[in-house]
Image (cartoon, rainbow, N blue to C red; front, side, top):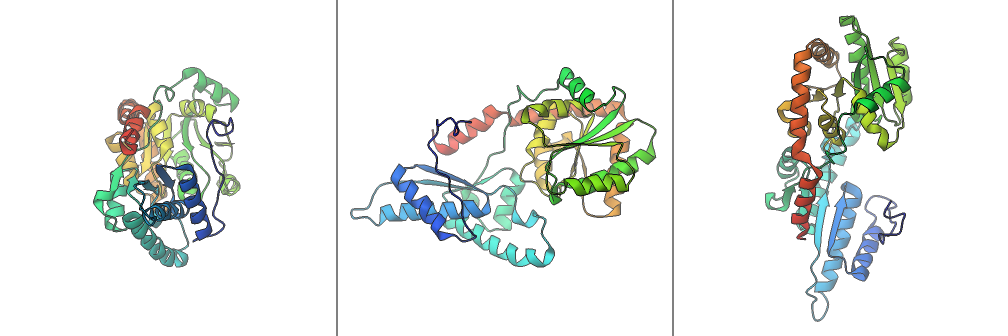
Length: 346
């Protein structure tokens, strides 16, 4: 919104291909012409090229006669480790080697700081990518806790829109329909839960993505299409209503950089079952239940049992709601801002 309003000067750039040195040179030119003091670059491809461009800008200043005293903070911020991405195995091994080398070089040589969202990602950067511990700072994401609160009126509004009764127990998930989000496992597990009890259950899957249609087909194949609601793309302001309408949040991701929607669900006070990947355990701590997620029948059964057990245990659900709210307080936007002010030395 600020950019569209013209409040922030910006340059629209994107690399044409991997290892696009022209992109790095464009970054270098902008840094020098605008006298930029801090560059904060996200994700692997754009981040590595941008940090290299920033390093070239600093090198240009040092090679001047007389050398310039110009300093430039170069922050490299890759959210999800490449090893956790969902790739075909025959493609992943050579790509993993290349990306490990890129992260090692960019993190140790070209960047002044490397950011990690959680302690487990920091450990990955140290032991898998061989980045110096002194380079790495852990700063978790944050949310506005005054916004993400349970709303009874929004719950009723969302449930009315999708013909959900007050007696329906709603299991929900919000995420892109992509391979790493685990929708297939969740839908199959939900199908098993329907066989285990007589409650009126519904599964709400909010979001869009390239696997949306195949997941709709899966629900039809399992003959549970009348029990599964796909909201498709939704407006951000509808998120409180969606979360408030849930009775149980299930987050069976194979990979996450942080899981911001998990944090939002915690703040709303939802009991949560999540995959046991380290990054989600960092965020959720002991306030969540965890299930090991892999593509197997065993995972489907284990997730179904976990969901069924919680649905039947009202006291446990109430206890988990309170734990979620308390755990979310560590991730306020105020703490987030303070951490970044310290990082940026402002």
